[in-house]
Length: 328
Image (cartoon, rainbow, N blue to C red):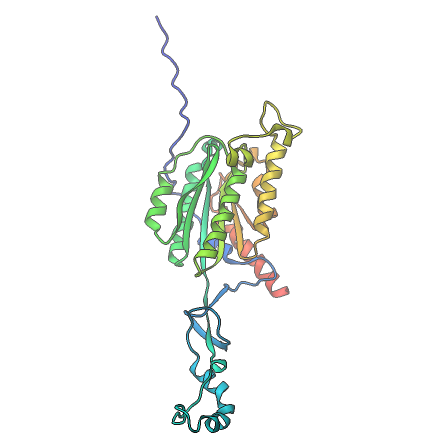
């Protein structure tokens, strides 16, 4: 009698969203606290067309709003001489004589918006490290970002590369639906996800003039196994890693690469990072925490035994930041 063939293991898994993950809203507020030395104030954007009038400046650019009062003040000291020079010309009857050098325009200021980029690990190792709880935490943080009228984006990474699943938007429904239907499986291109998040952040701040700050919420177990070169060029050069085996990089190489990418995030002053570690406490490697440290960001562990620890750690982060700001 022929034995039945064993069931094949699928390459991708689908997990429902955990309903019992209680994430305190202060977690996202913690992400809004900037690094030491920049206080807790939100950035401002200066422009020539929108916002609150700050001061009058000399004209620049093709479009601007005229600062009438400042222009008249600049022209006032020269009115007597200009009236004399205008006698006998077609300008003689003018009440006020204004020339090109008198013009002033308005410099406007408004509060900068915030873009929250959710960077979610969807690799195969996440199947063992509370993927359903990670989705639940992400959706709760997503809701808080929506209530704060922040723009949101979703990046997932699994297989050989990361991808922008939802570009910067204010659509909560679209992002939530994409997150809930997100598959899980394959490799973990952690370094590529950090680079893609940085690229998305910088492009948005450059193109979208109303975004002044970006918060990257990285949800991962830190178990990277796909090098950046493989994600970008679909090939890995073993000679770049002396400890590589069978044509694949060593764990040390992958960790160092991820930390190098995290340090690049730290160099961008308008960018903050929150790392939510989903790794099992008994098999923890500590890479996610190292990434948070390298990025000068916040670190929160999504504890398997007690999901409310996320809220506890977030409150501690806020308290610590407040003490630093006061002492600074």
